[in-house]
Image 1 (tube, rainbow, N blue to C red):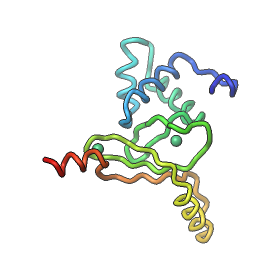
Image 2: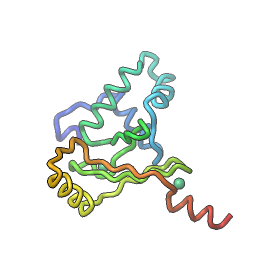
Image 3: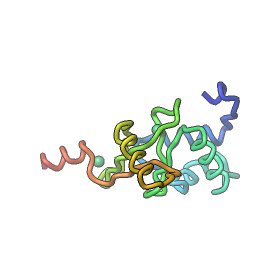
Length: 137
Ligand SMILES: [Zn+2]
Ligand SMILES: [Zn+2]
């Protein structure tokens, strides 16, 4: 995709992307640094943040603001609004495409005369897998 857009996926950017995609959990910048350091000794926090900025700009990852952490985007071929379901038990983050909800939200913003710069909703709770687990035990 980066080729098509004519932007460069440098080794460090690629590495950060792979690490974020490694799990469905949200990843913090300092965890990324810890894991990249052994391979790229010169990596600094600023290097990681620049790579993260690039990946966000390209829509390849999302920032979960309330966690101050990052997740991979599964539908990065288009700009989209965001509903993140964050499980406090297993830390997994599920991204849902919810055009109807977001459309309703946009209407509310319009009525309030409010210009939203980010349209991301983050919900904290217990995911389906974890609540199944709890009902068994
Ligand atoms: Zn996404
Ligand atoms: Zn869970």
